[in-house]
Image 1 (cartoon, each protein chain N blue to C red):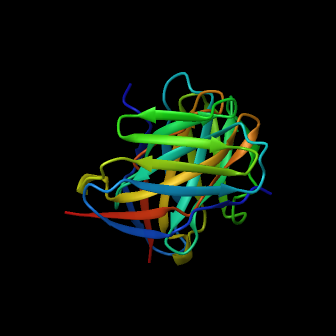
Image 2: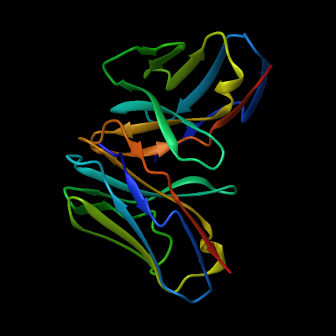
Amino acid sequence: DAGVIQSPRHEVTEMGQEVTLRCKPISGHDYLFWYRQTMMRGLELLIYFNNNVPIDDSGMPEDRFSAKMPNASFSTLKIQPSEPRDSAVYFCASSLANLEQYFGPGTRLTVT
Amino acid sequence: KQEVTQIPAALSVPEGENLVLNCSFTDSAIYNLQWFRQDPGKGLTSLLLIQSSQREQTSGRLNASLDKSSGRSTLYIAASQPGDSATYLCAAGGGYQKVTFGTGTKLQVIP
C-alpha cells in the first residue's frame, strides 16, 4: 500500500481565499483523522471519522473549517475564508479499529 | 479530559548512550499508547504501539513500557546514534477514545 496520501503538499494562498486539503487513507482502514501542527500549539486533533461518519469535531477551531468524507477512500478539509492564523501543517492519518495510526506527509499551508 | 505530558522538552546526549523518554497521562483508562518519531519537516512515523493489556513492546533498539496504574509510559533507546535525532511524541487513547498527543521530546544525539 502507498500509505496515506495527501494533496497538495504545499499550498500558498491569500487571505480570504478558499482552501481545500485532500486525503486518501490506507485501504481498509475505518478511521480517519485530521490534525493541525504549529510551533505554538503542537499537534491538535481537528476531527475524526469512523466508517465515513464524523465522530468528534470538537477540535475544529471555527465555522470556517469543515471536513467531509464522502466515501472510504477520500476526505477533504476545507477552510473558507482562510486567514493568516490558519498557516500550519495539516496532517491526515488513518487507522484500523482506532489502533495504530499512520500519518500522511502533511500539507504545509501558508496564508498571506 | 485526557492530558499527556512529555518531559523533558529537549534532550541532548552523546552517541552510544542509552536513554529514556518519558510520557505521562492523566486518564489511566486508555485503550493503547503509541510512540511516534517526527523528523524536521516530515510527518509522524509510528514506532511502537502498546495495547492496554500489554506491559511493553520492543523493536530493535527501542523498548516501550506502559504502566497504566501510574499513568506513565517510557521509551528506551539503546546505544543511541546520530540518526536517532528527531522529535519523539507519545499518544494515549484509541479504541472508543479520542487519541491525545503529548508535546514531544526533541532528541539530539551528538556524534
